Image (cartoon, rainbow over all chains, first blue to last red; front, side, top):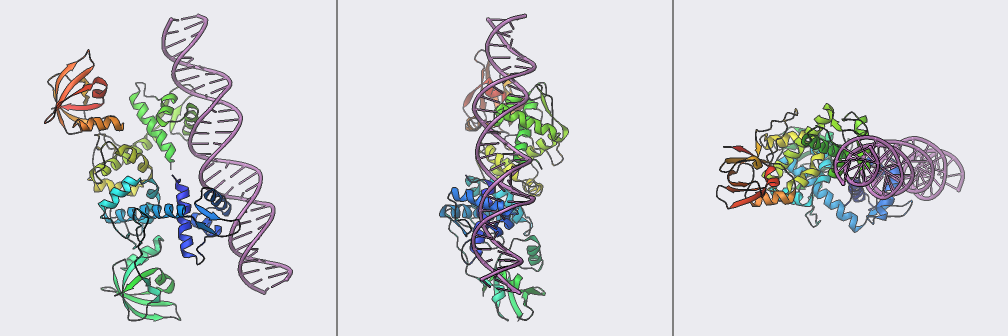
Amino acid sequence: MATETVENYIKALYALCRESPSGEAGVARLAQELSVTKGTATSMIKRLSLARLVKAEPYSGIALTAKGNKIALDVMRRHRVIETFLVRILKLDWADVHEEAERLEHALSPRILDRLDHFLGRPSTDPHGDPIPDAAGNVSEARSKPLAKCRARERVCIVRIKDQNRAFLKFVADSGFMPGVNLVVQSVSPQSASLVVRAARGEPVTLSQIAAAKILVKVI
Amino acid sequence: MATETVENYIKALYALCRESPSGEAGVARLAQELSVTKGTATSMIKRLSLARLVKAEPYSGIALTAKGNKIALDVMRRHRVIETFLVRILKLDWADVHEEAERLEHALSPRILDRLDHFLGRPSTDPHGDPIPDAAGNVSEARSKPLAKCRARERVCIVRIKDQNRAFLKFVADSGFMPGVNLVVQSVSPQSASLVVRAARGEPVTLSQIAAAKILVKVI
DNA sequence: CAAAAAAGTTTGACTACTCAAACTTTAATG
DNA sequence: CATTAAAGTTTGAGTAGTCAAACTTTTTTG
């Protein structure tokens, strides 16, 4: 079994590879993400490479192998099932569960994971709308687009909030936004890089393009 | 915060001090309990001593300090709340939860612990009848005596099973014995070091004195 | 394209934990 | 009570993970 540290590296690598156009991660970003020095990240990459969890040549990009990918999906599954449990059953604050799940995800046995998943009714997404991979590692991402790409007068439904930052989640939740909430885009102003949206029974809220890019919606 | 390893040493020391008449633990038993060598245990004791979690002189007994005791009770609280959750909510097998809780207990934040405890209705004992310390570290042990000390024809109620060994718990559960179950002691034979007991609607079961010593009961 | 910045690597050292094996002290027993 | 067994300690070494700092390679940019 991968250690807790290894799982965290793999998870971070998965996310970095996703968001990079080349599909490869770099040591600098990885180190930053995990709050370690570049040297530490380099030596860990060497170990992961030796364990065939990543493919990496010196001074070039890092990619997960199939084996590494499997681990990443498994950790994500555990993480998201726990988040769902914390919000739905233990009523923890939506914005806080990420860091809590971060510690618990490494201690969950397959047996408990399955029981928990079953208890929750095999949820397909976590409270932020992130898809939960199934036990075999299949992820079904709902079709969606960033709120930032919407036009004025569009009516949309929030599908997912793509950021785990507590402050951001707190702001989003305080604005009454979470997956399942319907929005109307009232106006879009490219010059100020912002847009104004309104939830069903709520005040209009101004969002920067950056914030709106992290809110995924589907048109209704 | 104490590391996972430190928490495990402290927990084992707590148990050993309890069961020793002198109230002090020894390195050999400690090492055995944690599946490490005596040398490893000695060096850890030195570190715990430096951190003021235990009081220990070379070649003499080990005792927990107040600070160490606090940690032990805290770990036990987490462990037992988790066990209760696993059995009551996730329907895990009574005999299996100990090792599962063993891993989870180190990953539970105070916040989650409290929510879980609240969700379960602030239970006072875990599924084996072991008392759950409250958040302040107070333990209320129910008055009880070992089944092994009972006389023939006594009617008793099982209060607690004092052993976490899976095989033993499985045997006990298969015999229909768990906390809350009423028993009648049918006969006691000192020469064969065993006794025969019967649950309300069950077959008579023969228990060795050793097994019966681990089953705590109260007279009804 | 040369200089500077950024990214990546290496080295030496440190903490936490572990073992094997030699050793010392204490306890048990013929 | 002398010997042996058990308990406890020390030493030397190894793995996992980390940092600081010097260094090399690649990328960016004036």
